[in-house]
Image 1 (cartoon, rainbow, N blue to C red):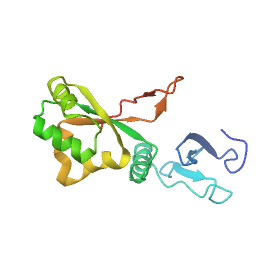
Image 2: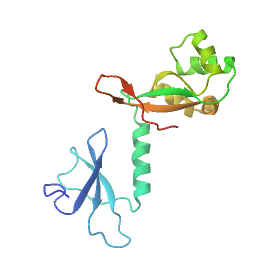
Image 3: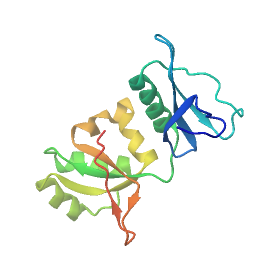
Image 4: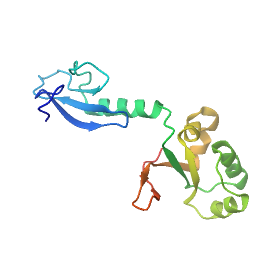
Length: 160
């Protein structure tokens, strides 16, 4: 619990997103009162009021805001996890703009699960389009925004 403004004994900070928004929880809330909200450094000097009563609803909304933001720094590992024809795999390669040779693609089509490559957030979002939703039958996207001590990327298993 923070002793400093704007939280001053009334709000508990329990998280923060990439954009410097703090996730806060109202302490000593009355039954039926909203409890959760966000606050960031560009807002008023005090936390206004809680806008969510459910933690699940609050975190779902935070996730939606995060996903809707065009995050150019985040990349996703594309993993083939289902049997797929080579022609379909070539189509997926072109849609997602994967940097993989036809020979490698053929090898990966025979051995799944297998990593096809890394794509941008923008490319990953293409799979949400109705035209391309078939992609989700064959591949998963694992967010990779972490580097180990040698600078090598590692994956958070967060499948869409």
